[in-house]
Image (tube, rainbow, N blue to C red; front, side, top):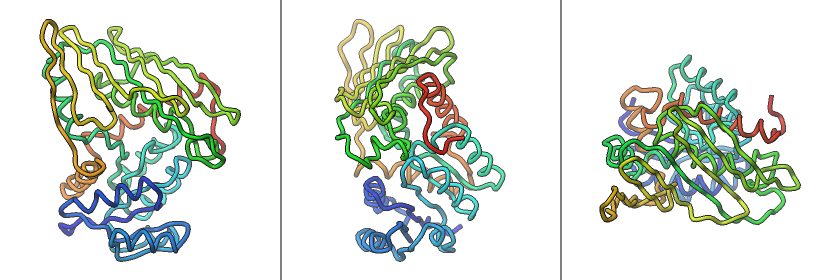
Length: 328
């Protein structure tokens, strides 16, 4: 493979703009082509971020021979279809989170990736941020002893507008898939295993999607994660990790630039690890590292962990009776 990784972006929405801006800071990567449902929009996007080509549809992008990897940045409900399209076209894929609507779809993509020996990764960008990488190392070092409890919340207020990706059921909207996935990921990072028990509660909109939801995950040895997410209620966006020798407090845990370590009987220690741009360049660097190394998945965001987190969210939605249109 050429030392320069050639990217395509499928979908030209808000998140794609942030990713494209950050990709310009990744040495050894270049944005070669973009595609949108509207060619004019694709051309404007390509001009803004200096991409050579703007394709009139997604199939044309996937068939472009000058691409190594495609970033899928469409709405949740299209992630499976568009990622499968890319893999079928022998393109490596970085798919925006959640990788799919449910675990069954995610597992199919993982199996296709492994069968065709093509790279696939969920764009859970939080996992690649410098502060989170250091946090994981600190926890593994035993700085707060053995973690026993995690509390994390991610609540925002978004207007309930018609067609909003936060509220439209046809787009697989809701607090869990959009924001709750971050809280479940931080629990996964800390505990490093699948929960043995999952329970949760949700408050629904008139359209039937969760606008406020809470999750209680039980792990081996009684370890627990108490989590919440909301699209109609602001919360501090804080994670607190409690161990038998201290605790860690992380503000803005889904994109942290620092955190506090409070060991029992000592003063708080502030750990600072900032990030550049919007924070998306680090996941792009990981994709680049994997592709140049001939790997088909990342050790920082392994595919089996991605699927296991989808199973947790499936379990929660099953308890609530929340199904999205066109789900099997």
